[in-house]
Image: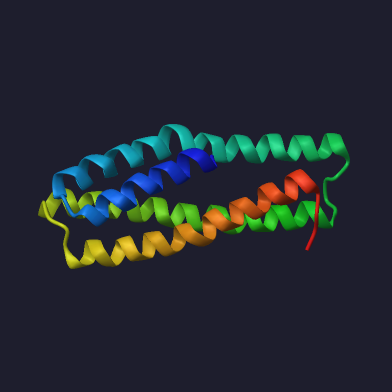
Length: 134
């Protein structure tokens, strides 16, 4: 989940910074495809397998579990919002065939949703590995 999400975001962000419309259009389509076939299923699989694993380890419904679930929910909300922004970006660039001011505005929002989402995902993995609470 993190590898595909971070990799896709990396390519889209740096392609966007170059400003080549046709390349941004192509990469955006691929990022949306990657999110659809890789990231989305992994989000749900991680949730299901994570809950099953916490149950097997006897960690379900304790402080640690609810902190992980709470942070996961925040990441999910940020990710869903960013995914919808990607769809808007695709619609804009396909309709206008240029990087408009609205496209720039949405890219800023997309970026600033991604930063806390990625950092929170890293916190979740840290908590999962070391079983720490805050």
